[in-house]
Each structure stands twice: as C-alpha cells, then as structure tokens.
Image (cartoon, rainbow, N blue to C red; front, side, top):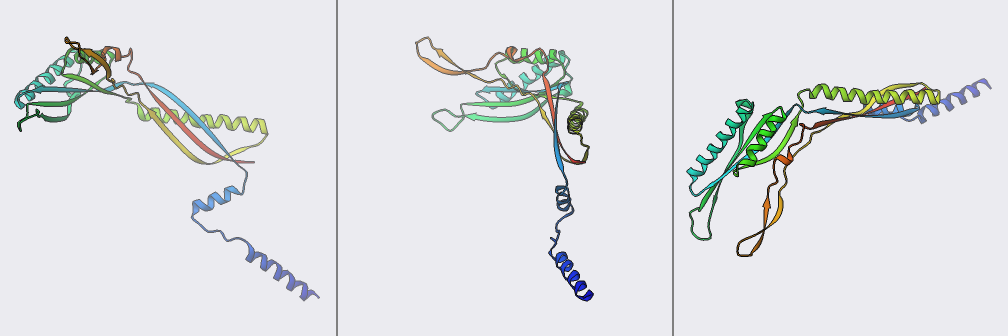
Length: 255
C-alpha cells in the first residue's frame, strides 16, 4: 500500500514540475516578468523652469545687387564692414561678428545670354549679450536697404546645470506624489526602476515675417508687394526666456 502511495506522489509532482512554464528571454525581459508578478504602481512627475537667456545669435543678411559682379562684391564688402564698425562701437567684439554663408546669383534679362545684373548675398552671424547690442543691430537693419534681419537664436551658458535642476524638480514631484499615496492608502512604496526621464528645451525663435501690401503707381496701376516690418517693433525689452521642462516616470512596488 505504501509503495502505491509513494508512486502516486512521485507521478503527480513530477507531472506538475513538467507542467510549469519555462522562463526564457534576456535579463531585462525576465526582470519585467518578475516585476509584473508583484503589485506595481507607476508615478509620473513633471517640472519646468524659465531661465533668462544670456546670449543671442542674430543672423543678418547683406544683399547687394549691381550690373557688374565686381561692383556687387565690392558693395557687399563695404556694407559688411560698416556693420562691423557700428557693432564694435556698440560694444560687440570683432570675433563675435562672423560671415557664415555666401552666394552669387546672375540675373538674366528677357533677351541675351549675358547677365543684366548680379546679386551677392552674405549672411553675418552676430553673438550679443545685451539689449543695447540688439537695438544696435535693429538700427543698422532699419537704416540700410541692403541689410535684412533673419532669425534670433537664444542661448544659455548654464545649460547643463539648468537641465539637472529641472530634472531634480521632476523627481521631487514624483517623491511628493509617493508621500501622498503612502499617507492616504496606508502603504509603503519602494522605487524599483526609472522607466523614463527626459529634459526638453524650448528656445524662442524670432523671425520677422514679411507682410503683403498694396502699392499704387502714379499712373493708377495697383500692385501687390512684400514689405519688411520695422525691426524696432520686433525688439523686446528683454532677451527672452528659455523654457526647460522635464518628465520622470518611476515604478514602485507596493508593500
């Protein structure tokens, strides 16, 4: 009788052992599987920080057009030199004024193979750190027909430190929520892993849009034209602020 019972026990537990699911996969996959067997809660934390920009890179385009290529090049160089002189008087260092892009475009008339004129376009990027310098650029652009204002890119010299600061605030927001859950539900939450953490930077971009206006000639003909708005109207009283935002997602085990 004992032999029969022993045989049944061995057969039963042996079949149960073979019936257990086999775990396969990478260490990360197994970790997810094991965590799913416990009581898990996910807490999300967000934070943002508005930082005043301390540097701006302003793009200026110098566009000159003459009947001769040499004259267009000479005029372009003359205008750029005048810009450099004016900006240096406003306190901008010479090494902060750099030409970056250059292009030459011949313009052909309705007849003939020889160009009727040449247009030279040169982009100058100016790195500034004050509102006064920004207004100096505005005065130059408004005062010269060959100069156009492009985009303004704001920079933060303490970028890395501010990224850490806003991420720390997001994790603190997670901890605050953790305390609320523990006090309200009478449980203990133990962090097991950070699922996600990201920092986003939103820098203001100021590009002066062109506007369409109607122009009437002396003979009464009306035409549509593109007009640049005044640069002074585009200059704000400050450099603008850079917005740092962070998101953190943390998993906790409920005890």
